[in-house]
Image (cartoon, rainbow, N blue to C red; front, side):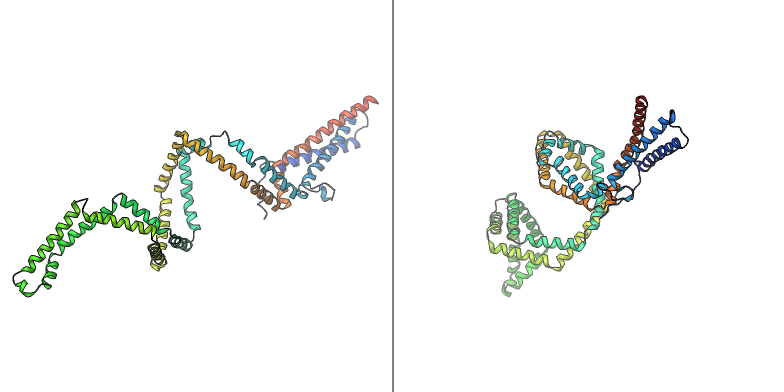
Length: 416
């Protein structure tokens, strides 16, 4: 693959090349004029010597500069077009240079040993404009990231993860820990209190139904003396008293029995393979049900739409939360030296590990990239960066060659 090569010439390479060539042509014209109209003696001799030596110096430097990038005049002269001819060797050399001088593990360790990287990170995050810009950048990138995610692929991933969670005897023990934690906090008693409250309401709403059920099960003789009504009222009062006692007494046997039941259930979840398998089977069956699949897809669609709406809002709550979180992290790093020291150790170790593990990969990436360029691309890139200075060499060669010619001519005149 060839990188994009059409780009402007901010370095002024073309202008400098024209200036160097123009100076060489000027010296050629002066040399011809000095031969046609000038005399061999006097000042014309010096002019001719200067122009002649300047031509030689300019031509030599033009040949040398051109030979670095291409063949002068297209002629197959040995040791010309140095860069295109040695492109593979240059690619390997550049890759090895970067790996050996920048990405070697011991060099990276030496460079970061005295750096307080976490303090710099903390100051950067604690700066409101920086954290705001960072948060805005992350939130602004969310719509593009969401567009890159296929809805069906995400839904299938969620179903697969939920199904995998039910395998390997992992779900039931985890649920056991949750149940034990809730029981330790007494949350199961709150469930019982809610049930008791509903029990009072059910009794209150169904007094007549209870009386009818008791009446239907009472003989006609007992109904004549209204024993059925007394029995029904006694039953209702007994139930109400029982519910009230359980609700008011934290040590009631019903509550203690519930605690024992919850503890036994948590233990069975952790230790009983039959119960574990049964729960995992229920979860797998539920996850594979079309209704659950549709619910997951609908949940992901709504979640994505909510994120998109929030990301596009000027008063984005996610952006504000992320901005505050980043600032708090930065302020925490600035204030807490212990945390900074611990984070510095982690960052330094990570950087050294990355250099040790991926230094050769970076070197290979650079080498392979340069190898993949065609000859015109690499010549153009190098000429664009150093070509202007090389054209200065041509100008300097022309001028210095002329001055050397003057000195030699003056010496010859003195010796003659």
